[in-house]
Image 1 (cartoon, rainbow over the protein chains, first blue to last red):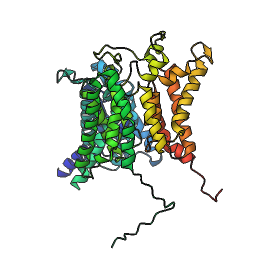
Image 2: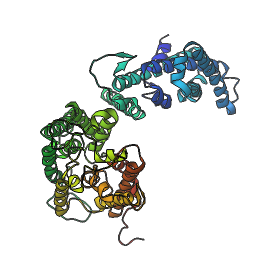
Image 3: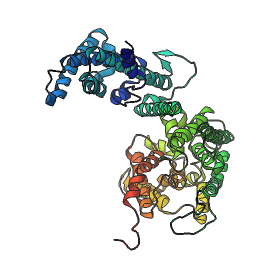
Image 4: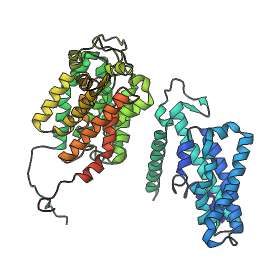
Length: 197
Length: 313
């Protein structure tokens, strides 16, 4: 039980996909304009991670070594299609906001990375907790980045104005602002890590 | 025991110059421009300059204190960054604009890279472009000169972009600074005084500023509004922030190429980008973007313009 908890927690802090492994940065840069988008993207990616990790760890013994990556992609693409169609059906606004980045989860390096590095070598239960931890870690990172960007870029959080008279710096909401915020957060986390070691 | 003998490569010349002295000399050379700016736009611009400089010094000292490094605000580089940023702002901005701009210049433009000598981009221009992208309405609202009560007026270049006729502004007005613009860019006379001082002391060479200004003038002349070779090149040289940028910002030691050949490439590149933005781009002025883009190209220019070592092929 304790091992499963460490599997789960590892993805959130020690091996956070965004801030430590630096995986999946393209969707992070693109969708972190608002917290709603961040949460939506995080949940979709978590769903795909869970599904692909479970299925791949189940069928890992029948996948031929040489064509394992195409096999992983087929599994991942299945779950991405499920996620995309559900999103289109139940929250079309979010789907429009995320746009091309939902189908692009297929090539998200976190999903493929966990399939190759973890699910293909571990049991189903362990893979489930690994996928959950990575997904939650990714979602939390997205919420943090998009929260900072939404607040400084538009002066709002989840669409609500927090401080009256605050003049937002629109550059933070632009693509250059995404690189700036992620860079500063990375520096901050590295500083904290150095201090702890 | 650590040896106290310092072994360094030749030439073993000693000169009575230091980074600190050069920085303060550049500040001194910018003094007439500041006086002219305050005279033209009123005491409000003095506040912008003071706030910008104080914020730059405070940010530098604060960050160096927090990261437990030696506090080097006395070397004048932070002072110069704050001063140059203020010269790149209109006189009637809210008080927090120079404060945030300077803090950003020093923190993101300079200290993040490791401090003086390590920065890729000119810190003052980083601050200006950040302010420009964040709060464009404040940075592009210019006030009328010599009136002192915040009547707004577009810059000559902005008027030109909107294809209005430039009747009210003469070359003399442009040269002396009687026009809308930023605090430190309007008075060409004061800028030239400072530049001559820097030339006389040998702190800057002619390569970057002259190749920069000539390129802009040439392109403006060739691609004139009424067909080829009809452009008003003199107007383009005198207006906007070209003189301030060419003499005081593009020549920044840290962010410009080392060799003479490289400096000419750098200047021509700045001129090309500035002219392209001015003549065909969306913005009326492109000096700050041009210099920042060429700053990014500086390491490559340095790599390809290395001087031949004497005695080798």
